[in-house]
Image (cartoon, rainbow, N blue to C red; front, side, top):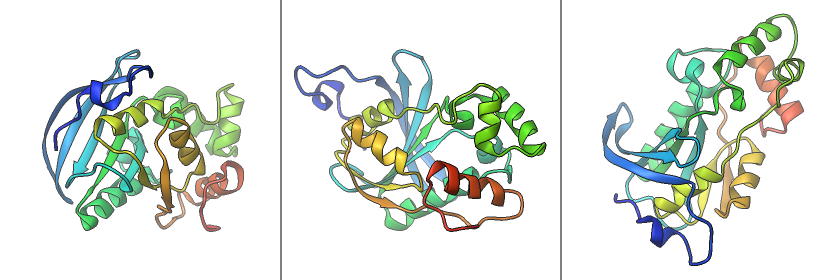
Length: 213
């Protein structure tokens, strides 16, 4: 698919887009062939990726906003469910034959960065949960923002989405940025011994839509 030019994605008199398109290329994966679209945040310089399959434009597009998680996505950490959720999102898009996954970089550890994330892990090993560990470090529980993700969707020609997420805050944030969420599709993976307490904390303290672990 081709990206919309920036001028066509922003109505006259509205703000400029926070991201710019860098390039697109074919990306074969274990789940089939996607197209990878690279974007750059104009203010921070951070580069993000959108993986698309089919022609995901218009309304009701199957979508996931996935926050970067080096430990889970790349190293296969079992402390979280991130890597499994990433794989499931690509699988669901492939099964439908159309959709978009936004891989949002600079959001490691819900926005606190890899160094602080490892410090928080150490506190969790001493008995704190994921929320209390961030607070103990003087850090926000969740520092992520999604306005630039909405602009990525605009450049892809997406007007509204069916969002794969267990986090209602993502729906609120995306709609506040001007992209309606027509449906919130639960996106849970089976818990296991290493992440059961973590998922329980997300359910009870952060409002994620998860069954009791």
